[in-house]
Length: 167
Image (cartoon, rainbow, N blue to C red; front, side):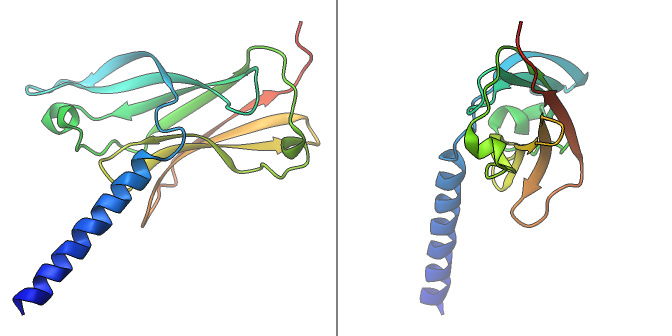
Protein backbone atom coordinates (compact mmCIF):
# COMPACT_ATOMS: atom_id res chain seq x y z
CA UNK A 1 0.00 0.00 0.00
CA UNK A 2 2.83 2.41 0.76
CA UNK A 3 4.38 1.78 -2.66
CA UNK A 4 1.10 2.61 -4.41
CA UNK A 5 0.78 5.91 -2.49
CA UNK A 6 4.39 6.79 -3.26
CA UNK A 7 3.94 6.15 -6.98
CA UNK A 8 0.78 8.23 -7.00
CA UNK A 9 2.59 11.12 -5.29
CA UNK A 10 5.46 10.90 -7.81
CA UNK A 11 2.98 11.02 -10.71
CA UNK A 12 1.33 14.09 -9.20
CA UNK A 13 4.72 15.82 -8.85
CA UNK A 14 5.63 15.01 -12.44
CA UNK A 15 2.25 16.29 -13.67
CA UNK A 16 2.71 19.50 -11.66
CA UNK A 17 6.22 20.08 -13.07
CA UNK A 18 5.08 19.41 -16.65
CA UNK A 19 2.21 21.87 -16.33
CA UNK A 20 4.53 24.48 -14.80
CA UNK A 21 7.00 24.05 -17.67
CA UNK A 22 4.18 24.28 -20.21
CA UNK A 23 2.80 27.48 -18.70
CA UNK A 24 6.18 29.15 -18.32
CA UNK A 25 7.26 28.24 -21.85
CA UNK A 26 4.05 29.49 -23.52
CA UNK A 27 4.78 32.19 -26.10
CA UNK A 28 3.75 35.71 -25.17
CA UNK A 29 3.65 35.25 -21.42
CA UNK A 30 5.60 38.44 -20.68
CA UNK A 31 5.37 40.48 -23.88
CA UNK A 32 3.62 43.46 -22.32
CA UNK A 33 5.24 46.69 -21.19
CA UNK A 34 3.84 48.07 -17.95
CA UNK A 35 2.59 51.63 -18.42
CA UNK A 36 1.35 52.29 -14.87
CA UNK A 37 -0.88 51.15 -12.03
CA UNK A 38 -3.24 52.40 -9.33
CA UNK A 39 -3.96 50.87 -5.93
CA UNK A 40 -7.50 49.65 -5.31
CA UNK A 41 -7.23 48.03 -1.88
CA UNK A 42 -4.82 48.65 0.98
CA UNK A 43 -3.03 45.60 2.37
CA UNK A 44 -1.27 45.72 5.74
CA UNK A 45 1.18 43.02 4.68
CA UNK A 46 2.56 42.93 1.17
CA UNK A 47 1.66 44.99 -1.87
CA UNK A 48 -1.76 46.59 -2.36
CA UNK A 49 -4.28 45.17 -4.84
CA UNK A 50 -3.94 47.13 -8.09
CA UNK A 51 -5.19 47.78 -11.55
CA UNK A 52 -2.21 47.46 -13.89
CA UNK A 53 -2.07 49.05 -17.35
CA UNK A 54 0.11 47.27 -19.91
CA UNK A 55 0.74 47.75 -23.63
CA UNK A 56 1.66 45.14 -26.21
CA UNK A 57 2.12 45.16 -29.97
CA UNK A 58 0.40 42.58 -32.15
CA UNK A 59 3.30 40.24 -33.00
CA UNK A 60 2.10 39.75 -36.61
CA UNK A 61 0.69 43.17 -37.48
CA UNK A 62 3.04 46.12 -37.29
CA UNK A 63 1.17 49.32 -36.45
CA UNK A 64 -1.35 47.62 -34.12
CA UNK A 65 -0.97 48.14 -30.35
CA UNK A 66 -3.30 47.14 -27.53
CA UNK A 67 -3.57 48.55 -24.04
CA UNK A 68 -4.81 46.17 -21.37
CA UNK A 69 -5.95 47.05 -17.86
CA UNK A 70 -6.24 44.14 -15.45
CA UNK A 71 -6.63 43.36 -11.78
CA UNK A 72 -3.49 42.37 -9.86
CA UNK A 73 -3.86 40.78 -6.42
CA UNK A 74 -1.49 42.04 -3.73
CA UNK A 75 -0.88 40.96 -0.17
CA UNK A 76 1.68 38.40 0.90
CA UNK A 77 0.37 35.83 -1.59
CA UNK A 78 0.68 38.37 -4.41
CA UNK A 79 4.26 39.23 -3.49
CA UNK A 80 5.21 35.56 -3.28
CA UNK A 81 3.47 34.87 -6.60
CA UNK A 82 0.80 32.41 -5.48
CA UNK A 83 -2.23 34.75 -5.56
CA UNK A 84 -4.91 34.31 -8.20
CA UNK A 85 -5.89 37.50 -9.98
CA UNK A 86 -9.56 38.09 -10.75
CA UNK A 87 -10.81 37.78 -14.33
CA UNK A 88 -11.48 41.52 -14.61
CA UNK A 89 -9.76 43.11 -17.61
CA UNK A 90 -10.40 45.71 -20.28
CA UNK A 91 -8.73 46.25 -23.64
CA UNK A 92 -8.32 49.18 -26.06
CA UNK A 93 -6.46 48.70 -29.35
CA UNK A 94 -5.29 51.42 -31.75
CA UNK A 95 -3.52 51.86 -35.05
CA UNK A 96 -0.20 53.55 -34.28
CA UNK A 97 1.38 53.25 -37.73
CA UNK A 98 0.79 51.86 -41.21
CA UNK A 99 -0.91 48.45 -41.20
CA UNK A 100 -0.33 45.83 -43.88
CA UNK A 101 -2.35 42.67 -43.26
CA UNK A 102 -0.64 39.33 -43.86
CA UNK A 103 -2.51 37.00 -46.25
CA UNK A 104 -3.42 34.52 -43.47
CA UNK A 105 -5.17 37.37 -41.61
CA UNK A 106 -6.96 38.66 -44.73
CA UNK A 107 -8.34 35.22 -45.64
CA UNK A 108 -9.48 34.40 -42.08
CA UNK A 109 -6.99 31.57 -41.43
CA UNK A 110 -5.57 33.46 -38.44
CA UNK A 111 -8.98 34.20 -36.85
CA UNK A 112 -8.91 33.44 -33.14
CA UNK A 113 -5.11 33.46 -33.04
CA UNK A 114 -3.61 34.24 -29.63
CA UNK A 115 -1.62 37.49 -29.73
CA UNK A 116 -1.04 37.85 -25.98
CA UNK A 117 -1.14 35.62 -22.93
CA UNK A 118 -0.28 36.28 -19.28
CA UNK A 119 -0.50 33.90 -16.36
CA UNK A 120 -2.85 35.23 -13.67
CA UNK A 121 -2.31 32.51 -11.07
CA UNK A 122 0.45 30.13 -10.05
CA UNK A 123 -1.11 27.45 -12.24
CA UNK A 124 -3.90 26.91 -14.72
CA UNK A 125 -5.34 30.43 -15.14
CA UNK A 126 -4.38 32.99 -17.77
CA UNK A 127 -5.53 36.19 -19.41
CA UNK A 128 -5.51 35.92 -23.19
CA UNK A 129 -6.06 38.20 -26.14
CA UNK A 130 -7.06 36.73 -29.50
CA UNK A 131 -7.46 38.49 -32.85
CA UNK A 132 -10.12 38.21 -35.56
CA UNK A 133 -10.46 40.02 -38.89
CA UNK A 134 -13.80 41.34 -40.11
CA UNK A 135 -13.14 41.51 -43.87
CA UNK A 136 -16.53 43.05 -44.69
CA UNK A 137 -15.71 46.11 -42.55
CA UNK A 138 -11.89 45.93 -42.86
CA UNK A 139 -11.54 45.86 -39.07
CA UNK A 140 -9.26 43.96 -36.70
CA UNK A 141 -11.14 42.75 -33.61
CA UNK A 142 -9.29 41.93 -30.38
CA UNK A 143 -10.99 39.90 -27.62
CA UNK A 144 -9.58 39.64 -24.09
CA UNK A 145 -10.79 36.89 -21.75
CA UNK A 146 -9.66 34.78 -18.85
CA UNK A 147 -9.52 31.00 -18.89
CA UNK A 148 -8.65 28.03 -16.75
CA UNK A 149 -7.97 24.43 -17.67
CA UNK A 150 -11.26 23.36 -16.09
CA UNK A 151 -13.48 26.46 -16.20
CA UNK A 152 -13.03 29.88 -17.75
CA UNK A 153 -14.83 33.12 -17.03
CA UNK A 154 -17.52 34.77 -19.15
CA UNK A 155 -15.96 38.18 -18.39
CA UNK A 156 -14.51 39.59 -21.59
CA UNK A 157 -13.76 42.79 -23.43
CA UNK A 158 -13.29 43.67 -27.11
CA UNK A 159 -11.66 46.44 -29.06
CA UNK A 160 -11.40 47.11 -32.77
CA UNK A 161 -8.92 48.75 -35.10
CA UNK A 162 -10.35 49.96 -38.42
CA UNK A 163 -7.57 49.40 -40.96
CA UNK A 164 -7.13 52.78 -42.64
CA UNK A 165 -4.37 54.46 -44.66
CA UNK A 166 -1.73 55.99 -42.39
CA UNK A 167 -0.89 59.67 -42.83
